[in-house]
Length: 432
View (cartoon, rainbow, N blue to C red):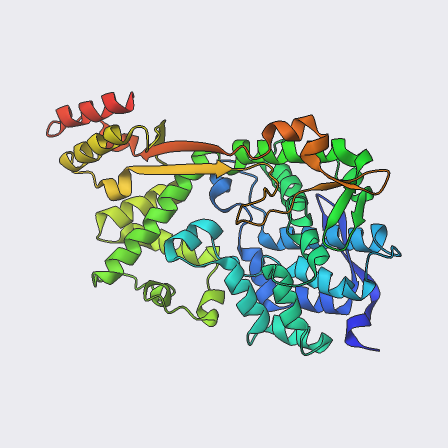
């Protein structure tokens, strides 16, 4: 029997708090889960610094990846199976892409990427195509199979239907993380009727579409996503922790470039700081490694690095004020100068952070960005873009919401004899 069709002698299940059970019958999927590159995802939190705000948010990318796989498995095995529009020969490709879609995430994902200017999706491709255990498993399916999986995840594959199951405005990735993140943060915003959505999904040549009768479940899903972004993902306290995390990494990189003599040499960061990181080096990085350095860097002689690390480790976070850097640029410039006069380095202790989200949008002719809308399947088999039928979705389509915060260390602004007047001016500008 070909490896691609080989099944386990007995089905394996993972007990899951969101989907109850995650079912694995395919040997290739079971082998992929057992690779060291996939197991590394146990050591990467799904929500980065959010655990400092919502104490239950300790779940991992490993859990999420299994969840996305399970949703896709249910769609193609329970809903799409036997339908003429679905090619069951693409089943294993779809399952592998779903399972491996987040394989390249680094520790504290997006903060880490922003500092070192790389893309986790690029590393996902390198892991799948490189000299790895994952690659060896995929090669057992076929010589071109790793490339096919990588192309689906990178959204460069010609198999648009397969891509839309994993990456679109209503995909298995979003459906899992909304519910999983809501569960572990303890909020109710991320809950929606996924069972209903799965039942009304239908395959078409280029994308998944939704039967018109399921429109209200999709409305609920979109509003759920909207609420989760503003109540959880963009929570100002979590963003404060991200600001400090980012500044720690910036400071360590700056010190390295200045030939600072670390008490504890950051060997795991060397190739990152030199911008010569290899795949082998990257795979050694996880959040336990990063937190180890933050712990020991509290003892460094550099006061900025040691202070920022103490803040992160002990959750002594920055306070924040509302400030639009475009409209209030004069105020920001004045604060920057006052911070310098007060002996507080504004590069590390006065930080504007902006968050922005677009809950739903559709492609408009003349725009460069390709945007795949959600289509409803009408009774006469025509397709209608969601916002044309839903007043709720139409009201928020294309409307980007942006929020700005100015972060600062409130404890540094307490009165002292030498800088009392300057700090008073800062507090007055910040209205604290």
